Amino acid sequence: MPIQDELATVIRKARYLPELLPLFHAQTLATGDNPIITLGIPTISPDIPILTDKLSAHPDATVLLKLKADKLTHKAETVSLNVMGELTPLEFLATRSLSLVLNADAPVSDYKMYLGIWVIRPSIAQRILWGLPLTPQHEELSRKRGVRDGVNKGILPFPTSYQIERECMGFKRTYAEVVANVTSGQATQILVLSLPESSPEFLVLESITAASTANNAQIFVTRDDDTNYLKLPVLPMDSAYDFPAFIPALRKLEISYYADANLTNRYVRFTIAKYKLTDILCARFNLEATQEARESTLCGVVP
Image (cartoon, rainbow, N blue to C red; front, side, top):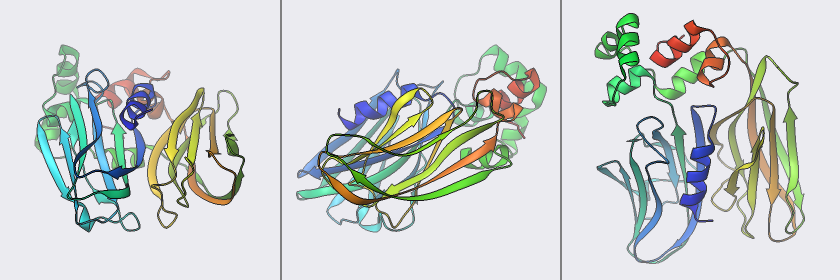
């Protein structure tokens, strides 16, 4: 399946918003423009926009990355990027369309990149800041909670990652390193974490990486009933760096390794956190919650 179709499928299946999807891609580039992603309505919309997060790519003076979010086009010289270094902030909002093109001055073999993509349900504060339409209910809640005044003062909204950090309390993190042996054509399960029914906690995949390899090697991530929710190619990864994600699960997280060849001693590393499922997070994940939590989350003024 083409990368943009894979990404569109995951965006449509995202349910515990916001989710930070890790996009890994490797491709041999031809001279000229190489389209990687083209997304539009209804996959993304003003009600479920996406926000690019951080970028990492193979340093190459012949490659120019062109990202177009809605009408604005942004360009990044990839010579300064490095998959083994710090991730570069690349925060752009797409409410109607997103396209990613790699322009090469000459052919490039196995060009590798990572891009974090937040799938979000915008709060009233974010809608005001971003100029998105408000419903009469939004306007009423904004007046009740003083949201517009908070936006005008620069107090609201919080950055997505900071908002999550404030809300996710009482955490326990599992930082795991796995060496896997893989049978050709079979998905080898390397981790399963499950929670009891009606658990007061939930799980989050917060980072993942692996030693780079070919043979169509992929890491599959199953979340609750979403079997193989993420299919992450291993070739663009680099075990020197942990690539961020935020994939919540209420019941189960499972990680498997797949390849088209027999592989031995393949290194995989990931971080999984366990957080308390508070009233605020229940409201954010569209679960049963109090009216107060629902209003606060909708406004974007908590905690």
